[in-house]
Amino acid sequence: QVQLVQSGAEVKKPGASVKVSCKVSGYTLTELSMHWVRQPPGKGLEWMGGFDPEDGETIYAQKFQGRVTMTEDTSTDTAYMELSSLRSEDTAMYYCAALQDRSSAFDSWGQGTLVTVSS
Amino acid sequence: SYVLTQPPSVSVAPGKTARITCGGNNIQSKSVHWYQQKPGQAPVLVIYYDSDRPSGIPERFSGSISGNTATLTISRVEAGDEADYYCQVWDNNVDHPYVFGTGTKVTVL
Image (cartoon, rainbow over all chains, first blue to last red):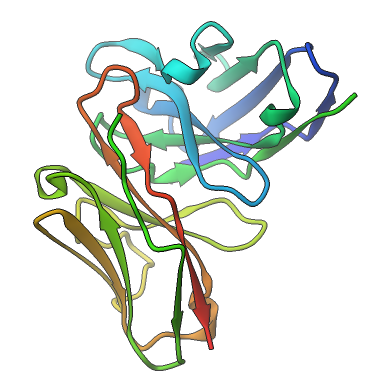
């Protein structure tokens, strides 16, 4: 059974960057396709990007292109999501979520990391 | 990019059946997944590949798809089913392949 444990809440100022981690246990990171989904307060789920297991590349939603970087450290089975040039609209809960192959469901989720952007 | 439309809210009495729809262009050609999210918690997968249930999900939860609409059905609704529900698909769109529905708040009366 996959378990995903994320890093703790962050408070950042506008213009700063934030890096959220997601530690995998029960599986290795190479056995999963890790993605990131965010949810602003009171709003719906929004896919940000993730690893495409068929192309072997990380893909990003066009909305976040140039501002987000997703990386993986397979030695520690930890995935990272870094978002730069933060603005107040980036205040949200950020989740890592894993799937097995391209069209499958996100069957494992982290507990979420709240990122608050405020001056 | 591909759009999935859900009703904002559905209300149902305990013991009755709740049906949550998810509309999308030719959605029957895609695989639809459904998630339940309770307040303050991460989403949980309740239906995958249109109608399959993960282990641990009650048989009361079922999924179907026809034409341009996918439906999540919750039979014999319980108070604990009160939550937000989201549908999701993978779309062959390089800019935004993973799409979530707008979400439906299920209220148990």
